[in-house]
Image (cartoon, rainbow, N blue to C red; front, side, top):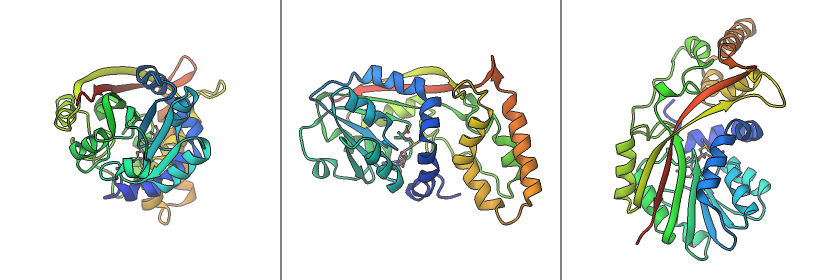
Length: 285
Ligand SMILES: C[S@@+](CC[C@H](N)C(=O)[O-])C[C@H]1O[C@@H](n2cnc3c(N)ncnc32)[C@H](O)[C@@H]1O
């Protein structure tokens, strides 16, 4: 529990994420498209992807001709990103403290991007200052992060309820402002962090989208179930129930989860609203 979203949590959880990278990419298609459009990757520029995971944005930037560098704290993510985007430099380390310029020497970065990779720092102001320190004057920052849990059934809803109810020690949502997916739910808090870290022209705009879980015409129910089991709720279930619950009882829990997911089928597939922030800033120093 204590390790849900710290380095240990990500190291332990990364393999399940990597196994399902194609599914995450499919569901997060609108987010990737928005970041890529806003980032405007160009050839002969260097761009940095913070919390790059298995390399979706590294692939997009490379395809546009940019020289991409990724940094991630989880070895399995780094390995997957290196495999997926061999042209990119992928660093294993904590973006909050790592001397990125020393590990990936070259021109300062023109762009910094992230898809859901910047909400896990113990000191976010220090982290965004550290990242800014390796950017060029005029460099652009573009990332997408989550708004509140209440607005995002992907967390704590849309099927997670049945599993959570079966846990002896159900998770309490991390308090706002602490590391976790919803660390930046508060817009003013987020804007202040970026300003204090030295970023200019900070804009935090609502970005409302829909996460369609259909793959190849499926109704998306099994895909949503797969993502639940691959992320925090599934990990907690394995930690807390693996040796205590009978197979039959677990099957019941999974069946109830499916039933809850079914209620999110709209026009033939599971569609969950995504309430996000689209964040842009620049380095004017
Ligand atoms: C929600 S995942 C997103 C991964 C990827 N950006 C994507 O969209 O597929 C968050 C990522 O941030 C990474 N991460 C968490 N804390 C980090 C830190 N302090 N420094 C670098 N990466 C970190 C995790 O290992 C994980 O890969």
